[in-house]
Length: 280
Image (tube, rainbow, N blue to C red; front, side, top):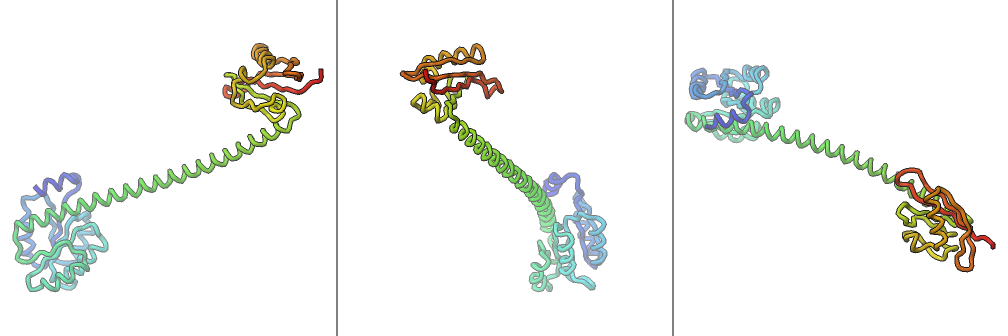
């Protein structure tokens, strides 16, 4: 069952287990245990041969090495494996007499398990199965970490672009506000009154001179409610004819009023009128 679950994790990748031991009969025994498993069992008698297998046959999911090896001991060998193939699960085999020295060296080689000789076949099968599962879980976690890193980098890039867009739009709005303020200052500096009316009859512009002549701020009001009847009549004429001018009396004051229709864009339509005091 362990084997089937592992193969479902990555069905396209062969499961390779490397056993390193200088005793041929030990290797034969280990290989025999897994005859009924869909594992590729590789056995070598030297550390050098083990390194060569890893260089040529990777990925090797699990490496099991005897502790007492000619020349380089098993832990030193597994340290090399840890350095060059860190994803490979590493285990060490040893006789009971070596237990204390092996256990003290396990952390140095980041060894997953210590397997004592003589081993129990069933326990060894379970240990190998869990080691393979650990390999694929580690591989999956690594892939997810890379994917998360990529997503974070993409998100960082998007945020930088958004920040740039916000800065650009903010700068544009600041510039537009300066233009609007300057335009309003220009209108307020004119010696005549200027009133802007949108297509719905809403007063959207009224400079200082217009406020003085008409005695109130008209912005935001409906022109039919806030403007004198004579001016409203002129606006109706402007809407029909495009341009119109007349003298209008407001109380005891006479105003020269001229209007023109605005046809620029859909958002810039309406009527603009100019008013000025006129001696009778």
